[in-house]
Length: 438
Image 1: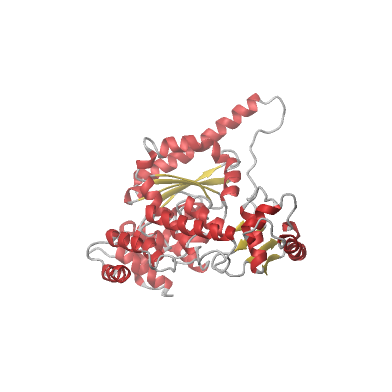
Image 2 (image 1 turned 45 degrees about the vertical axis):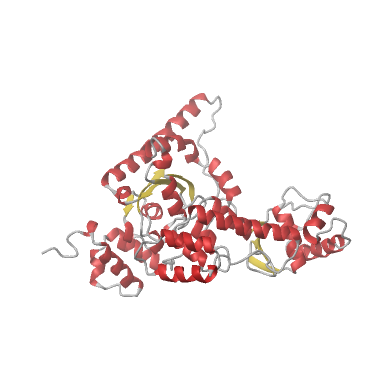
């Protein structure tokens, strides 16, 4: 008779799911947990202790600008051609897997591979710039490989986060060839074939090949050097967080978050000040007084701009002096992120579910400033078109439950086409469509 502990590497999916639920419920002594591989069981316990969410999206640690600068300086950038050649031979867009390369902290720097799979995995936040460490998303191959400093495979329901459980993955750390410090991690994600013995051999071999390539490049650089300085590339410093974030989505009054050595301070801005600051944050090249007045007041000759800018400068001088705008043209000389731009960046990377979760509503919904109305319409239409084109049915259904998508018959009809014929959700969708079109 086969017991639960006889074949832990091949435990039935339902049994693993039940063991996972028992652990989350606080029943660590449930006998079903004995069926779970010790590697996975220990990782689940670490995830539980770290209070990792079981359905949360990973944090986006690097915005588009930070990501570009950070990965261009990362030691693994020089090995990307080799990684693609070994793990994504032939037509990468039809490869059947997604390959990710992350740094030593678990932040994904490159995510490439099969077009359709990237669209689906993007829904769960498996995108460049996202943090996939074990402390951020729980048991998953990239983070667990880094936590254990060895190659690992995580299959379907072995993932701690429920959103990741449809997938399987294999990952291996990449070390500095001389110091043996971890430089990053290689990961292959896809269906069951992404967690076979052959997949682990390939990922391990690729990691070793990358380390050898890095060593050869260093030796060559030293041989060509005329001085005695070491040609060892220095590990990049952790990319800095944005100094400030302007939050305008779903808010009549914007919140300006200022990051400093003592933590984060939040300043609530008046509607007019929020409009002015949003325009400056989204027009980094600067704006003439006439153009800024047109975007905020609808009149390039408005006499209200100058005194309002004086008042805004006084507020910022007290709470965020680095953001006091310069003049001629009006412009910000320090970085200011907005949650609207972050949401659009998530869409660009294919992180549809995360982008939708980051969209609580329109930007400054009560504002009638022409520039704000244009941004608001652009964000809403970009979100809608991206979801219609690439999102999974689960994400589309979530969008249909928002204010933006609740009365969108096209979205509802697409959900109806994508759902299985026997899905219990179909009846509700049909009723909603008939109500809208009746």
